[in-house]
Image (cartoon, rainbow, N blue to C red; front, side, top):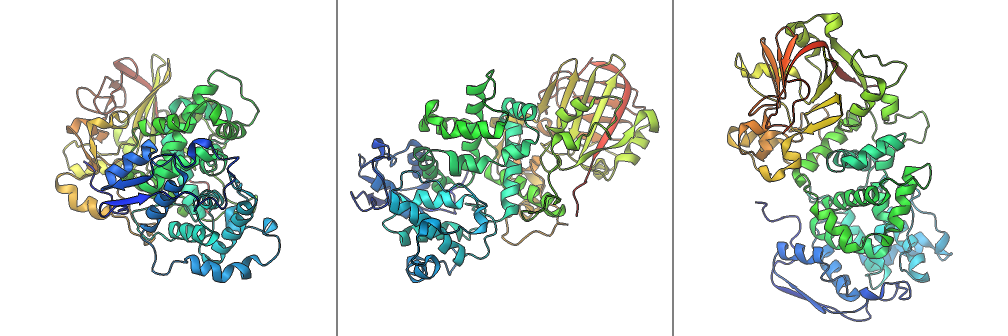
Length: 581
């Protein structure tokens, strides 16, 4: 079971928050505000523990009472652990005239770090619309270390609805930005953090919204460019009543809520638009329009219900994935937003697998692009590199190992004499097989997957991804506990790029029912095995000539081709980094 969340203790003792009536109306245009969120019951909130508050937030307990929500926001934000010196309301009163001046604040230029983001007005009155720019400018003055924060205008505009004056809103936002709990993430403040969050969101879509992901790959030139909009959907396009409900839960549960809601938005977009022609030639614009007009098809309650029905990875695993994506960007020199058109840019699927320089005897360019759309985002930055082929290097397992060791990850492709095509994405360097000595032992991580392309396309991922009830995430087992706890402690100190992270979806992070749930890959001088438990997804002999395939517990797959097959061609592809600077 998950333990108590230490980063936020909103109710250290029984506490009652009572709602006032008119304290928080200064910046609100009540003609625009949904009548259902004016001052209706309940009038107070009594909470005793985090789990209770979490349920109340999800249920929208204070969503129907504007003043009560304002007081709850104030309490939750006041309890965020912050740096010792965090700008407060008094600082704002001291600097606002100097920063904003006496000119028309409606034309006040915004800091460069908001990246020309939308500045939503939501249900603000004229005074509130002007105040947003003043507050953002003052935050820019007090936080010189912020280099990229496109969500900030939305956060300021939202919290201004629930503040008595500009200074109070300024202080609330500053506390969110100054959170110093290394295990708690709230708002991205650097391009590296933002870009890695977009990659992480892409990885989550690939795992949890496969139908929508397939559509994105089919209709967009650059999938990550679409996914890079995910924060804009929330902090820009989403109507006031929706983002306020999201913020209710976000302040209690943290950043993971944002991923959940964005995934739910994408699921609803795909469901509503399934089978319909796109409204424009730009899928990015179509999603923005859908989110902006979401009230036509989905209520706030249904959106959150869908979001929390997604059985997402644990917060710890998502943080490991985020760190791995940040590390990949750092190694490629992508740490700040480049203004130059020649700056390093993520390869989209069509550029990564280029028709002019890709040649395989097993798959077409289109098929390789389909496979490339399945791999983790941090490796989609790379181009395929042929490491081994039986046509050139011969049918020898020893030669297989000699050509591919030192490469991680790898992609195994097989074409049978019956013209069936199948394969596996393998997360870990094959040299790891030596750790077992002469004994055949399994290694790898839950990012491994197996697939077939012909006669029909099917991908099988780690069984735990679709059936998390088979494992209890978040605890270490056996002799790995000390190593894992040190490797996965989340320090605020930047990691050395040479440091090896505890892998994302490492089996030791989960309480698995048996070892058969994590038999990802194994190799010896006599055979290769991929997937295990009541069968093997692949068994290949030492001559790379014959193989077997069947259902296995690790991937819960069907046979990937004829159960006993003869290999016509076998290829192993690596990932060539073309973006290093």
